[in-house]
Structure formats: structure tokens, C-alpha cells
Image 1 (cartoon, rainbow, N blue to C red):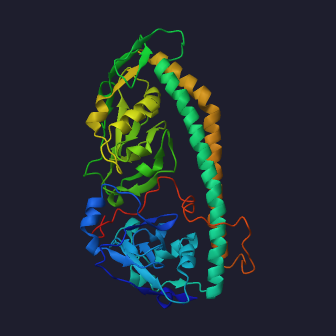
Image 2: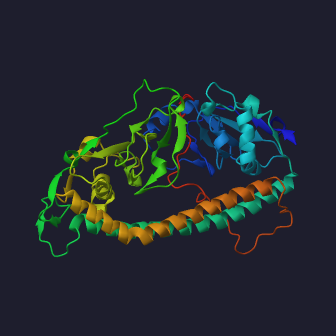
Image 3: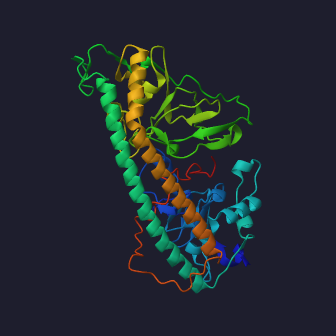
Length: 439
């Protein structure tokens, strides 16, 4: 056992504007930022302030190290001033310590050594990090552990990719069911009429076509600045949602520690759709009673008006014709967004009675049930393999599993481009503190 100050030195180097920007993922560590977003202009204007991380250095987010926001730099690059960069001494393999630092036991220690006024935003400064004790296996053993875990990660990554591909196929099948039901209804013999909108095509002749804003209220409820600092809620961000479902449980957070974009108040029957990063197709119908669900302002919240079955509206919004219209009208290439006023002008066709809408919902649910069950089982398998991975890492880096005699087999092929698969899709990287190090 040695304190981290015996294993790492503190690197504080600025003034390297030509290096690439790095970001930290909560599950897969440090990676090169490979896409531009709306913060790019801010980042580019402040690159002189960014810290250099040399290849093999460890970078961690001061406020989110306790969640696993740490990893080795894959190349020389730049990280936000809100990050700490440490350079390993000869006896420390930075990849080994990145595995160790992301174990649950170590992250509990991070909490103990972090300091701050608000617990949710405690910071782990270098002065505290260097005092933390860490295991120190012999360097050859560290190297062997890293080789073993990377090989296992490669197997797990291939498994997760296969499962995600299956979920994608199942979701596409479900969308075909939805698309047919909300454009043709239940009676295949009913007469059709031209909707007058090229992308919408023909619809049953008794259906009504109106702009979306005539069917719904947009963003009817918002948290005010006078909200009690102690108000605790579940926060739904863009990374929590994929088409028609939540992909991870909303984070529970207090208002005083919440990001400024946590403002949209959700209620049962609402449908939310992302108006930023619209390529993610983040759409979710709120089917539960809740008074503590708050969404990011990156969503538009659609509250159905009278004569609209809420769940039917949810299916309309996640249908291919509507989603394709959203993406086609989004502005921006790498970080597309759509104005809510534009969204509200899109024409939508609905059956004239709630009874007919409810009957269509029932048909969609019946035909989709086997697909929903298969998606749920597949998601559970991904969750279990991630839990297995976390347990395996913890056992190996602490010596509970001896891998000194392990030798790679023909199937133990490591593909660096695939190793990000153990992370969550649409995972929110820890870049809220870009620039001056403040939220």
C-alpha cells in the first residue's frame, strides 16, 4: 500500500491549443472527443486554459470522480480546467489504476476524501487525492492484470454489441407496427383521403389533420428559481431516453445541486421529445403517476389537450413519419436542434374520437407485447453482463482472482474501437464544467 502521491505526480500544463480535446465517460474512461456540439465554440475559444494530459496520464473530474469519471489519456490531449491530471511514476501502470479507481470500494474512499459545501458537488482536489492509499502490486503483475481485463472487456464488448443490435432490430419491428396503426387505423377497408402533406401521405378520410400545437400544450409546467433548494426529484436527461423507453433510471438529485437545464415538470400522460441532438430520437411517454419527474430543457414536453388520448399521442410522436420530419427540419450537422415553434407547426392526423384512439392503442400494445418482452430480456442481459464485469474487475485488481498464469488465447483479440461498448449508449460525458471549471 502506498499513498497516491508516491505513485503519481501532478501535471498542470496549459498553452497547448493544437492538441485534441479529451472527454471523460463514466464507464469507459478518457477518450478523444469525436464530434462537435454546441459547446464547441466555447471550448475552442478557451483552449489556452485547458490542461495538457500526456498519453498515459490519468485525468479525473474533480466533482464526479466518485462516479467513475476517471481514466488514462489515450493520446496527448487537453482536458477541462475542472479536471485533475496526474502522471504515473515507473511503478504505476495507469490503466491498472484506472480500473482500480472505478471500483465501488475505491469510489467510496473518494467520497471520504472529497471536500465541498454541497455533498453532491464535493470535489477531490489533488492535495486530497495524493493522500489516498492505493494497492501496489508489482509492476509486471499490474501489466498482466491490464492485459487480462482488456481481453475480458473485448469479449463483453462483443456480447453487448450483439445485444444492442438485437434491440435495434426489435425496436424497428415495433415501429413498423406503430407506423401502420397511426397512419391507417384498424379498418383496412376504410376510405382514405390525401392529407395535403407530402410526408404524411394518405390518412383515413374521417381523421382530422391539424398542427401539433392545436392538439397539445407545449412546456406547460416549469420549475421556478424560487423552488426550495431541498426539493428532491428524478432528473430525466437526454442520455436517459431512447425511442419509446427509458434506458436508465433517472438520477435523483436536489434542486440546489441540479444543472440549470433541469426545469421541465412532467406529469402522467405527457410525451417528451428531444429538441437538441435530435438524431438521438429521444422520445418517451410518461405512463406513471409522478410528482417528482423533471426533464432537461433539451426536451419539449407535450401535454395532450381535450379529445386526445395521451398514450396515442405518444405513439404518434415516436412514429417514423413524425421523427423523420423532426430530423429533416433540425438545424446543425453535428449537433442538430429544432425550435419548439417549428415542432408545433407540424401537421398531425388523429382519429376524431378518443374511443377510436384507445382502440388503436390497444391493438399496438397487443401486437408489440412479444417485442417489448424480448427487448426487456435483452436489456436485462446487458445489465447482468455489466454487473459481472464490475465484479470481475474488483476481484482481479484487488488480487481476489489470481491471473498471473493467464495467457491469451486465439479468441482473446482486443479491438480498441469496440471497447467502448460496455458503456451506456448516449452516455452523458462529464463536460458540464467546461471552461472555467464551474457548473
